[in-house]
Length: 208
Image 1 (cartoon, rainbow, N blue to C red):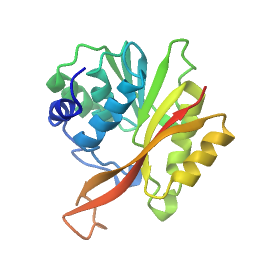
Image 2: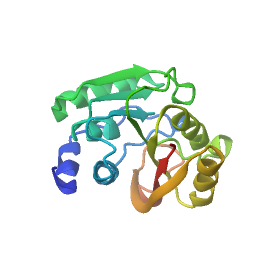
Image 3: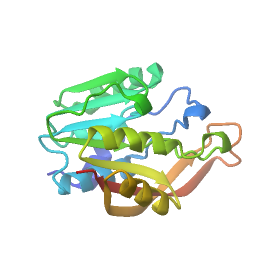
Image 4: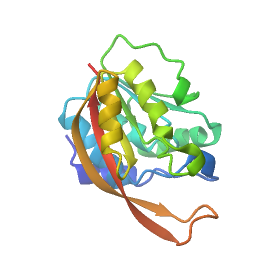
């Protein structure tokens, strides 16, 4: 298994959004964070040989991180066609041999039947940080609960009670959690500084 740092180096070539949309909270997942999440999932035997679905995949950071750890296949799903085009270019840069499908669809109403094979969801959903988009991540968790046995998701700081309660109410259990730093570049008008580091939280939920 490649080291976590080696995986982060491989993911450094993954380009972000050309024209990010504030309404979709489109931010490039930092390579170090993606590598940490994927490495943790791999250590839990949640990647190799399985189907991995990235809900709201954006330009493919988490999907491609998983693709580099020998899953059976990867599906990246996003509502916006522009980042999906970038994701295909990023796939060529990364050079993974894993079959990857990029699907344009709404992750909150994903047209996916519960797969018969072992499946893991990885996702960096909108945090719902804007006042008119509160708990946007709830709808992504609802999709994850319906299609997978295990999910890994990134959330805003202070989400522990919400995530644990949601999981318990939907037959799941949070088994792993860790805090991480999420570096946000200035890319929208409401940003006041060139860069800002915020605290994010990552959760593994067992839905079985």
